Length: 237
Image (cartoon, rainbow, N blue to C red; front, side, top):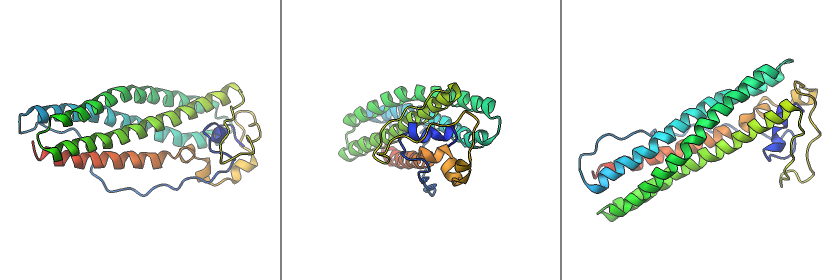
């Protein structure tokens, strides 16, 4: 098993050669966006605009970082397959670390604004608008939670790459999918044995190992729902 592909053990996916998750079909949705000036100058409408936009800005910034990470993770398998991949894998790891730093920096501001948006519902005079605002906050929360989880999973990839680079044995964490224990210790960095070559291409893509595309799709669904909810609420402002 190639060293970087031993990430499966670190990322709790059980036995080697675990089937890859199929790429999800794109879901038609309205993209999340910043809303413009509201027409009605009420306490609710002003607060709604402020806190919705306050949440949307870091969420969209996190989406940008995730897109960069998605591309970079796609380079890990071909770089690992090369006979002398150490420098390129180092570059991949450094890029991922930089993107993750920016991604984690967006989480706290987004959470603060989502909490404020949820509180804003209390100032709505229409009970239906108040209910819609709470649901909108929940939709944004789902998107943020997915972003956070994907950031944590991606951080596991970086840690595994660092373990391989330093020759450290990868830490095995028990998982119900593989109660038998860890796979055999990986060969030296740069190895790409026959067993690994026989694995399906999708099984060698670390993005499939951590369900990156599936997570992105769920983030997009939550953001699309939030965009539609925001339009409904704005129609009253």
